Length: 320
Ligand SMILES: NC(=O)c1ccc[n+]([C@@H]2O[C@H](COP(=O)([O-])OP(=O)(O)OC[C@H]3O[C@@H](n4cnc5c(N)ncnc54)[C@H](O)[C@@H]3O)[C@@H](O)[C@H]2O)c1
Ligand SMILES: [Zn+2]
Image (cartoon, rainbow, N blue to C red):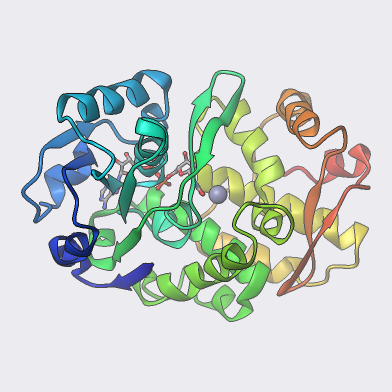
């Protein structure tokens, strides 16, 4: 169940009640907790936010807190933070006692339109991002759009990259709104693109792979930059590359409109990383995919498809 709207976190106690939890642990991004009190009387574990949260060490801290609070199989984790915090808290909920329930209260634009939905949880390994994780959907996702008011501009831009991605995949009308309208007004519409696809393909056996648009190169850039590029900034560059590759590989004609939207959102247009720096991360993806790199490319706005026949030379020419 996903819900969207202003002030929704006030409903947390009411949404928890039907789950009849035997215990609750709030796992929160410490910065978010300082800005937005959570109206719930329950023990709290405050963690650093950002990618630094997605480590084995932080995962262990969450597990230790669950043990210390003696949560049993009827317990519930409430995760309060951005995509990184949700990923580690959700993964701890997936692993503890082979899986206890959790509620996601996403606090960034990126997490409200994307990361909080669909049940993927993970931590990073030095070899690659999101290498260790599980599918473990939360019982509820409460997207309180009031939380977005304190987001730093760079985080807003990051989220807008995923909004543009969803626009290209299945909501072309959003392309004109990203970077123009107040994000709170289109969060639900942007998330709906992912929710519809995930409902049809929860375990990413087919259609869900389309949501990786911009991410093949995006993840490689994010990792090769040592995470100095944010996830959304890297995805924006990956989207630009996908549009440019698609223009030459499968006749995509709307690349200029997509890149104009990314420009308007203040997202980067140059990665400043040599292609060779990306090939290690791309090779890892290739191995995971069974020997061939699979690219998600737009054929038209609202029509994206998988391609495993993109020549490396073309990719090299199209990396921004
Ligand atoms: N599980 C999935 O399906 C999925 C999908 C997309 C992305 N992700 C993951 O999400 C992560 C990125 O998440 P993110 O972009 O939400 O960023 P984040 O969780 O890294 O948070 C970014 C920063 O914003 C701060 N912050 C969060 N909410 C705030 C608020 N309301 N006000 C002020 N500051 C706030 C945090 O403290 C942090 O410093 C990546 O690790 C990515 O891999 C996961
Ligand atoms: Zn993403």
